[in-house]
Image (cartoon, rainbow, N blue to C red; front, top):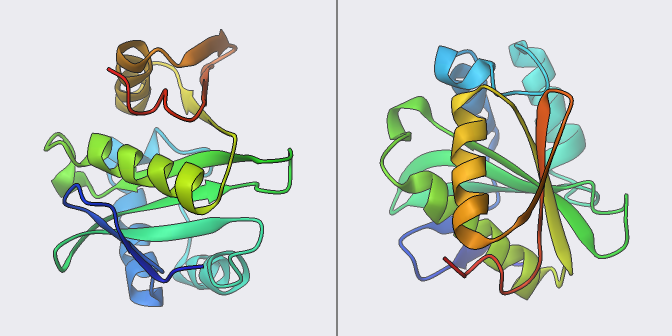
Length: 168
């Protein structure tokens, strides 16, 4: 797999460094981020273990650092690649200081292009907790682009097929 991918939309996807994963640890505890996460706060040791055991092997989960030029703005991933054939789950965390500036949509486009063109996936799925800023972002994007969505319990689930990610 390529270690750096320029997606032609202003963002570059790179293999994340440990320092970038530690920056994500700081971002995770910000009020605009923490309520959107499946998992709560982590320690520095837990984040290092995540980097070493999950990020570096890039087997079942492929994470990419999102860069605007040299500026690290977030971490995205395509996870659970072995759960269902040719499908991955989208993971995205944009640094709090970069939220609301259009980076989320750029990051989604970059990650979906990577999923479909580089990894050859046939579908990408995702989940976001309802009544959070993150869920409003995903619901708006899904509605604009015609993605399949389903509300169940406290979650919004969505499914994206190739080409549907570019519509809207």
